[in-house]
Length: 345
Image (cartoon, rainbow, N blue to C red; front, top):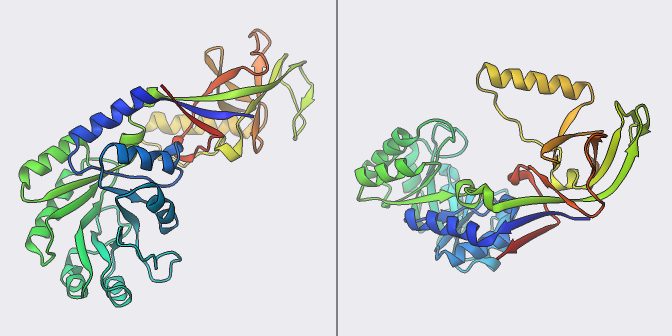
């Protein structure tokens, strides 16, 4: 059974190199499922790119990052005294602090720890507001301040907010000229550098680095079985009748691989909302489009995907693939888990 990601390694690495060359101070984000490629693969590529720092999402990801990467490891999730793993004692780890009380707590627990202070942006997720900066600085004690960080929204223009924080940083008591930023597009980064030449801008980039050239990433699923079906025949766990003559394809890839799992998306505009309503109506009727492409078209699930395989209906007019052949699949890489990741070339 194989649900695999095949990477055109020369093409993918050419994209990575281009991003690194045009993005001074790059901090690759290596978190979660490693954007489908695996965190160990991404850590190795970050080393090849010559990066001195990577960013992980949580403290659970720190041990493997320290093993796979020789440089510094920044934790994006804010340090909290009650979270497991936050007592890591390694000089390569850079903690993120976004509450005054946490600054004081870490200063008491590990006074020589390396940290960045994080500002609360319009994301409203974590961070200090501007009025708390002085108190945070006063609580630093012996903590080693490595910079200031802002995590911006993904929607809309972020330059004005980034500039506002850069100005606040320069006029505050936070003694650092290093600003870590997330979610500034290239032209915004360039403008911020031009307007704030006295700051070291360190962009933390994940999706547009690792998944910036999707043409280099090929998801393939193996056909495990093919059965001829007649209209009305009942199949699957739920024994639903088949709506027409055709073929039942059993394809590698199920819920354990992320198939059928979808992160919620905001529908912007009338057309997008209409598509959401239409999709909901089809799913309520037991019809759901699978991510698998056969003969140039995405095909319908015959029932929800199983844990490690999916049942897909192919019309009788389309010649079925042979058992053992592979078909293409469209996935959301941040929720995908592959049996194998193969770097070719």
